[in-house]
Every structure is written in C-alpha cells, then in structure tokens.
Length: 246
Image: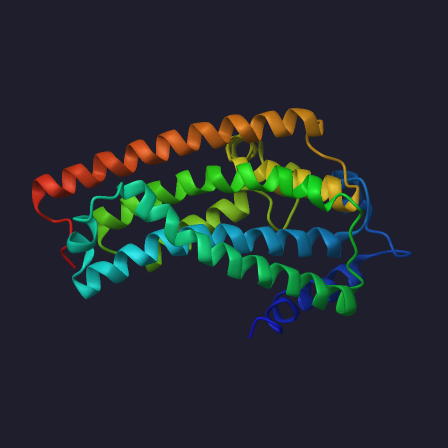
C-alpha cells in the first residue's frame, strides 16, 4: 500500500486547497508560510511524519510485543545496554522509512507536481540530529509502555500530538499562544520548518542558523532526558517485579 498511501491521504487536501485558492494562490496560507505552495508543504510534512511514527512504533510497540511473547526479561538479560537495545531496533525501520519517503516524493511529483530545490543534503543535515532527539522522546514513550503495559493507545496519542504540535500538516503560527509555546519546545517543529524553508523556499520561524542550534540543543536535551526516564522506569519495574508482565 506504500505506493497509494500518499495519494489516499494527500489527495483530499489537494482538492480542498484548490477549492479555496484564488488565481492559483492561497493568500491566508501565504501570509504564514511565505508562498502558496500548500501541496509541497503537506508532502514534506507527510514525509517527516513518517519518521516520527517510526520512532514511536518501533520503540513502543516492540516492547509490547516482547511482553506478549514473554521474552522481554530474557532479552534484557544479555550483557548489552538497554538504551542500545531500544535504539538499535529503529535502524532497519529508518532505512525502510527512507525508501518509503523517496517513493512518496516520486509519486507526489507525478500526482501533484511536487518538486524541491537543490538543498536536499542541507535538509538531511537538519533532519539527522532532530531524529536523534526524537529517539530520546521515543525512549520516554517506551517507559510509559513499560508502566501501562499498553502500546497502541499511548503511541497513537503521542505520535499524533507530536505531529500536530510540530506543524506536520499546518503552520504552527496559526495556533494559540499556549499551544505555540509547546510547539517551540519540540525539536520536530524545527525539522518541519527548516526542511520546508530549505526545500521549497518557505519562510522559517527563525533564521536557519538559529534553528540548527535549537535542534542540536534539543537533540542533546531530549536524548539525555529520555534515557534518564527510561532507565529510572526500567529499574523501578525490576524492583516491583513487573518488567515482563503482560
């Protein structure tokens, strides 16, 4: 279904955008983003959201699956750091997601006229530290799964909220100030924003230099905080004897 997923999800937005445009322009949208290329805005959001979903589902659901199979404690008895075990599971899935993102770009090019500038490598430079920061947030989600023994609800809620607050499918500038404050804390906000600024020449929230610094700081902060939360919860579950229960 990978070939048809972007068409199913994005086609309704394409026709909705066309119906609200005047003379080929969306003046309200352009006021927030710098141009009227709403379709490329959505396509890039769709691509990056794929990585967000991969982080949460890989880390959270894999724990639940090991609990269900009754192998979590035996797997974690190996002389390997728990953080390494958790994050290493994401590597293959990131490769698969990257293939899907490339395929999405090709499909959307022919379906919606999606094109990007020559700044792809620069966009990747912004993306990688942001993904590392998201791994830290994924560890925190994994800690919630350890406590709640439930993956689907937790992952659906957290991944959807992160994509929404980060501006996956709409400019964060349209949100109320309270929600905008939350958006500016999340590293993925700057991944979405910088990618659109680099690839489709939209106006960023801050200068790209400042956004890159924010991404690096967020990467370190979320990685440290997520690791700390996960290790504390894992230790507490061991003390209570509920680590591998399902």
